[in-house]
Length: 168
Image (cartoon, rainbow, N blue to C red; front, side, top):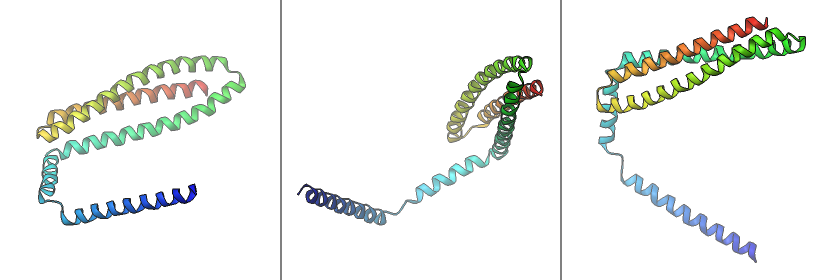
């Protein structure tokens, strides 16, 4: 008996949900989107077109950052192999040098994290500035923040190169 009641309740719920869905789609068909929404998007693109060069510069810095991150992943992968080989061979001097470089890398990671947070805040402020219509100064701040992030990543790559050299 309980199974029949459960099935009946499920079928009833599906019928109610189907009816609600049909009412919403009918309502949406009666009220097409207004022209104002299209004009709003047009204004947004007009505002952004003023900053085309800065947008390209920001995108170029993002590409560079992603390339640097890719290099870091490759170097870290190489380090795993070298570290395991040094551990097997018992090369304590190389492991000691790598340990010091690791500490430096950890402090650089903390600095990088702070820069990434700053960059995120700058991008949020940029969004608001674009809406307001004057974002030239804010674009400069975003570009500067991204350059700092890329510089920090380059410093980390240098440390990874040192670690690789120590383990070779």
